[in-house]
Length: 518
Image 1 (cartoon, one colour):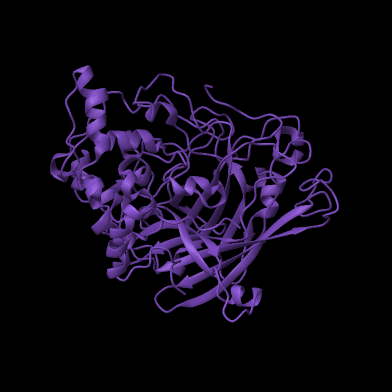
Image 2: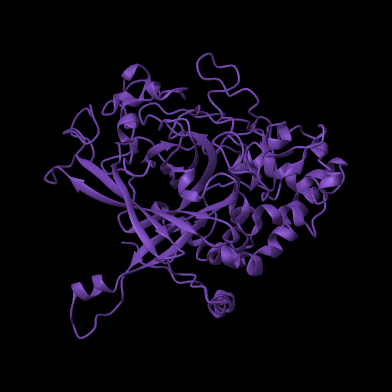
């Protein structure tokens, strides 16, 4: 177990303020893009380090609309390591939170979905920790180490806890030990490209997708390719951007949990909900009482929140160093008091002005009183309009013969003309149709982030366009996009996406990884 790392003393005043507000920043929720290195302390704990959160509307297996939630953890997994491999951590609670009604503006989780994992070995008197032979089916004799998980629903309004079901984690993609992840079911080949139908998914992923029969939820937990893309090196190297850029996440895998939620569980589709995720690590009391030993420790075990993830960009690119670790250990309910200043007066916009726009004789963007940026990030929930049609999805690119991007999909979301009709009020970027150059009478929201977030959304370029534009007045939107949506020189992931659950790309083959522009 990784010991709890204390917060630095200079954060004591902020944490005291949180305590006075009745918020416990180190407790679990009661019964510019993510480089995955968002805050100093969590970078020391990769199994609990959140990478990206996704939330979007898609049909379930019966054709009914559902909310798809996903959380990535364990950044920068080098495919094909050994003898030990990357796994979910048994001492970490991985939680996806959904805010409903007034809880959205308040930043309170209404419903929490908790994933917890267990690990078992078929043999321990061997150095073959993970693979004892070719794995033909998940959890067969060839898969020595197998993880299982349970999913619980916690209604924070009444502390009701419901066991939704359990599932099995498939193996990582090692290569010859896991041939069915790869082209031609051959471990010497690259991982399969994204597919358009469930029947085309690889064998391991298909076996690991679990639909819980009593409630209609569908779950998955396992290794996937890291579907986030961007030239993070250049962004944080004094904004010395290059074209083409180099995808800093290319060649790496992550671990991901995904959950498909029936909208009936959330009260229907005539609403906007908020989504975020946390990880909390098991911590034990340092001393026992009257020498009662390990049983007393177990009884008094608690969980400490160590990471939080909502929208891409916020903690990494907008929150100052002073508050990054505080963000990780708090809930969105404190965002309006502690973190609003970072969205209203984004330092990143000031840096873009000084390092990119003004040296190239381009007009400076407003970097104060940015109520439009605050509408995205405060509170830091991904706001999802459930009333729209299902979102358009990325596949293997616009020209792929077997799994092209959906017609109308744009990695730039609304800035690329990808919009959806909204049939319910509540989303902060719900715009009357006349503001978008269309006949009056309808309302529209972005087709991707910042209305939810899909796999394939280019959150770096979307975020940059938003920061250098002025979207504060819906009647006079000033969109500034001098580079036509290509700011870091990376416009796609090296692996295509699936158009069916769990959507994220196949994990890369440790024997033959794919690296883009490196």
